[in-house]
Image 1 (cartoon, rainbow, N blue to C red):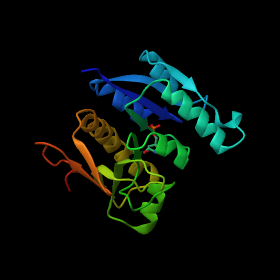
Image 2: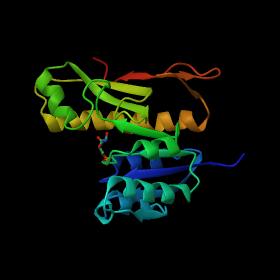
Image 3: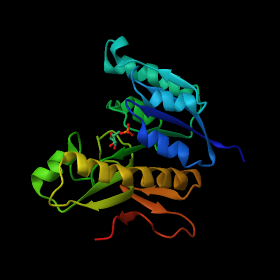
Image 4: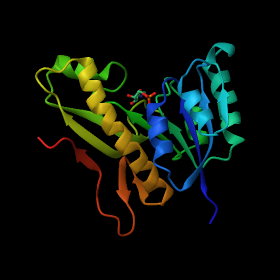
Length: 212
Ligand code: GRF
């Protein structure tokens, strides 16, 4: 069977992208596309021999035009899956419908808590004792698509935004490759807002680390 094809979209340092590349999944990473020319993740992708493209949103007069151009470019790579890895643009419903069921995102909170930005500081402000990250399929409602896997981490009394972010990031790197691997193996089925595992797969949809 032909290898499945992945296109990764980034905007910045690309540590999640790197974790996915390092996992050496059975797939072809056809391209890494950034909306920011300065994204340092682009160097990592180039060093790994992956085709990279910059599609700078500043060069497009509105979101619809940017998204259309992005979609046309993504399409040329014939992806089975589009992986958003720190991609800091909200995608339009048109883009999402065009690649329906084929877009994954990682979000640094235990969704549906703390959608949007500044998740770690908001978690600290709310005094939650568990925080974490979520991999989900992308639907037009931002940060609300069907959840594939989550990892929880403790919020420690001495935490600040940075220490909490780095504890969460370590888990992001673990769960993103896991979720993508399941997708590539056709182990995920979406039923409404729920992701179920097909076949004999055991349920591994939640990690808590380190053990408290
Ligand atoms: C990650 O925390 C991701 O969850 C969020 O933005 C950050 C991107 O980091 N959406 P990186 O570019 O993958 O290092």
